[in-house]
Length: 315
Image (cartoon, rainbow, N blue to C red; front, side):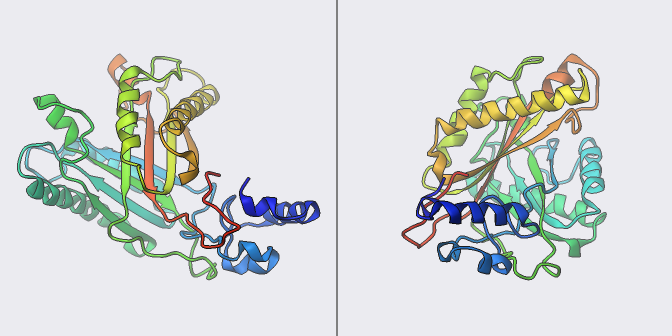
């Protein structure tokens, strides 16, 4: 509970929670929209939605992982994943973030531009199948600076030539004009990684994944924002059971990360996909291992409030 809640009397706290529970559209557990300012205590005035993200919003994540050396063209192996990504989001509006990377070969400056061209190649492919007016686009390119796999082997290089796509549903600005949907700053950080070594029917972190999560956590020093962890399973087991298993996996990752960062610097969120969005459609031991994963997404946001009665929140 944040400090501004503590300053309210008991009956005002009760009233505030009743209002919160009745709000829709522009409210979340953390932020309050302009339209609802008059319903809250004066201390809430500066505590507002910054991006108008719906709490139960549609979120989709995809990976393009088959770039050839020094190439930006999408390979056929990634078309199915991107086509499914488009099919999943056609009926809703929101923001599409594309985060691209390279292997270590080439200069840092060249690789940064190569990763940018890869992200733009994906945007071009998606633009052919989507109504561009329904989406805000955000391109991020990190070159060789954030490898998924360490090492200089052919396998490591292939794994590091990749791009992540994330769609987040946003509120229709025309319908809810009180929401503040700022364009993201060009230098806003977005980090995405995968924790892919869960054993069958387990939600215990593998030591390899802890090393990767430690590296991910080190990137979050002196920044604030949202950390979303999405949990997945393979196809084995009942749908309902797999959703619960995916949630436990996401929670295990979240709990571990909270021991490595200051949790009050971030808004935390868990999303559960179960078996519904596999990376591989094959029914093999290798495919099953690939699909038992968690995806971790950090998006930078300013959470600081200037009121002395309010603090950063990890709600």
